[in-house]
Length: 243
Image (cartoon, rainbow, N blue to C red; front, side, top):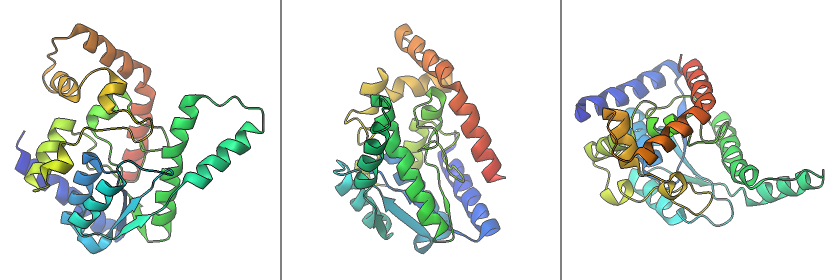
C-alpha cells in the first residue's frame, strides 16, 4: 500500500463528495484515532470552517479532554451535547413498560442517541454526517447498528486500523492521538479487552491471511459470521448514501 497515494485519494474522494453536495460536514469527536484521522481528512478536503466537531458525552466522558484537544489541534469549533438526561429518561420510560432491559441494550442505546444528535446538528447545518468506522471493526461487527455503524459517507470504510494509523502519520497527526489504546467509550474497557485479541493480530490476518494464534482466528471468524448482517446492511446504507 502506498500510504501517501491512498491518503491523497481519500482526501480527493471527500472533496468530490463536497463539490457534488455543497454541504458542510458533521463528525462525532470521540477522542479516538478513527474520528481524529477522519476529521483531519475532512479538514484537508474542505477546510476547517466547513467541519463541525460534535462531542457527545453521556454524563462523564473519560476522553472529554482528549476530544477537546483534538478539536483545538484541528482548529475546528467543538459542539458539546450531553445526552445523559435523555439516556436516563428513555431507560426509565422503557422500564415502566415492564421491559427487562439487558446490559447490551443499555450499552447500545448511547451510540444510537449520539447518531441522532449528529443528524440533528447536520440537518440544521446543511451538512452530511461522516461515518468513522474502519474495515477492521466492520469485519468483526464491532459497531452498533444504527449508531456508530451508519452515516452519509465513510472515508475509512476499506482501511484497516494499521492503515488508518499510517494515514494519520502521513497527515502529520501527533502520535498521542494515534497510539492511544482504543476504547469503546461505553463499557470502560479497551477494544482489545472486549474482543480478546489485538488489532495488530486482526489486521495481519486481514491483510496477509496469516495468524499464529488459532484461538484468535476462531474468535475472529466467529465474530465475522455472527455479525455479517451488520456488515452487509452497513455496506448497503453507506453505498446508497455515497451514490
